[in-house]
Amino acid sequence: MTARTVERVVTGRPTSDGGGVRLTRVVSPEQGLDPFLLLDEFDSSTAGDYIAGFPAHPHRGFETVTYMLDGHMLHEDHLGNRGDLTPGAVQWMTAGRGIIHSEMPQQAAGRMRGFQLWINLPAAEKMQPARYRDLAPQEIPVVEVTGARVRVVAGRFEPLAPAAAPVAGPVGESRTAPLYLDVAIAEGAKLEFATPPGHRLLAYAFEGAPTVAGRVLAKGQLAILSAGSTVAIEGSGRAARVMVIGGAPLREPVVHYGPFVMNTEAEIRQAVSDYQSGRLTAAA
Ligand code: CO
Image (tube, rainbow, N blue to C red; front, side, top):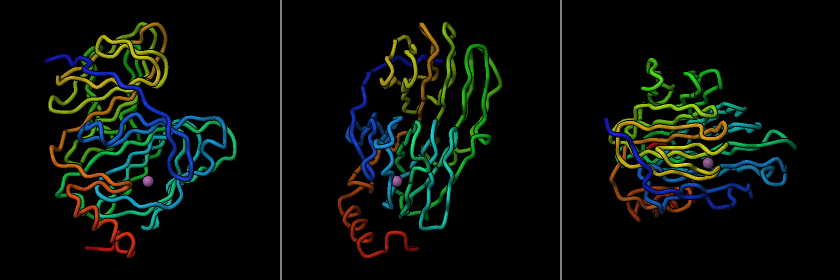
């Protein structure tokens, strides 16, 4: 067992996307955090920051994971799926060869908070049919050990100290074998858990100031971790919450253009042309 250490700490930058939603971009494609392409955090109690939502737009070549913490959004796509995103709900969308969807706020006031993560797909799976999974809050297992409460969105959570039985989340079939944990840690508590050794591992502090692999993170900081098979999180000072995201790197060329992520420029040109001619979502 090798404990992971912090290689680098980065801070998200403010931007806007969709119809004009203010958000913080924590991970972007040019950082090369294979298999992760993007991590956005949105958090505002000002309706003007989120009310425009994300009107109909396409994706091809990767997966998007939306995790709501506060507020209410409605997902609709060209396949006829309608997903209610309420606090604690997760939307796991495999765009594959193409999906056209919208995510619109269902509230005119109050706090809207959550995350959207983009996970790349291997070349062999980029043109698979689109797939959508809507996970209600009660479908996400919650593991409570002394001083910590972990929601297991994807992958397998294996606590080593305090030790407890491993628990698998509801998602985990893709080649990147994603691990997605929402870890709440109490003041002074320490949690150590196993992580798949070959995985890229990221930890984002979104409440309080947790200590991740021995390094204190301020709220809004992302730790990029070294290789290893375990990681430790401590509630230094006060209660904190950390998003832990892991995935197997694909080690393939990445060409990103707006909502399309492929392996070559030619495939990007094809995606743009398919979208313009209404064939993005057509069966192969
Ligand atoms: Co989208």
